[in-house]
Image (cartoon, rainbow, N blue to C red; front, top):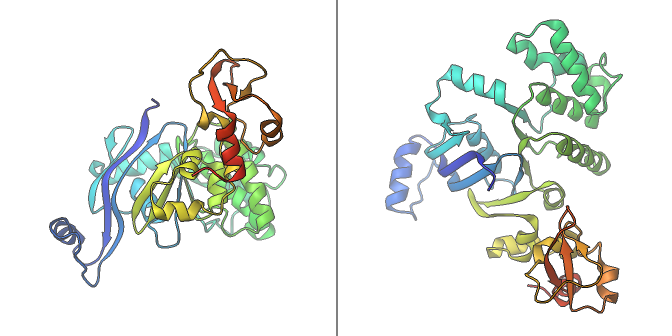
Length: 337
């Protein structure tokens, strides 16, 4: 299994006058309710694997943004532990923490946070300036990143001269300029209109394909999560209700709350053939189907194919098992539970 880059164990975050004491009281009496305290994150366990995109989602107030700020130690946790590449970040000194963020982490938040009096090029180069890089080196890197996000030629513009989508691209370019291994994005597209949001998702998927980043992406939009995620962590009232692949969350919701989240989703659009693979019960015959294809992609073939069992191949063309045609049709027709 791929190694974990970020590991959190029993992480809790309580806001209030004496959160540590309140957490001790809660462990003794889980039903305790006390005015003046907000339990924003509750006993969360997560492993974020190297190179994956983990999407954290939930409604407003579910604790998703607070959790991600705990993972980067932008806020201090009340209980539990967070390790980044094996280092407990609670034990880092202020200078060590700053160095970790500058060398390993990139962050993009809902508010673009661009400096209005600086050009686009200067905004992207700003974190490198904070690192002490010389002007020519940081500007060369900034130009590379602006080209990567499709803003070549806009270097001398000011933020006010750009559209919302372009400003967001500047924010993404700025976070990428430091070459982060770990990338935190907190609802980066939420302020954009639907068309620009879709374009930015496409752009993000393109960037993801070009770079091996470990990404934690926050959204409240389930369709966005399904498009982008390797795995999805769904939160409610500070807890992670389920953390799994989009296929498994749609096919096998762990709780009633997750089931409600997925109830309006077209499962055939989400579920890949590979998630339904079972061992072959007989030698493979006929044309195989690729594991990465969705049920919706293969709808016409599934309806017309007379075979009971259809062989499935991986991205190298090797047969990895089969899918029962009836199982796939159940997903397509909405009969799978």
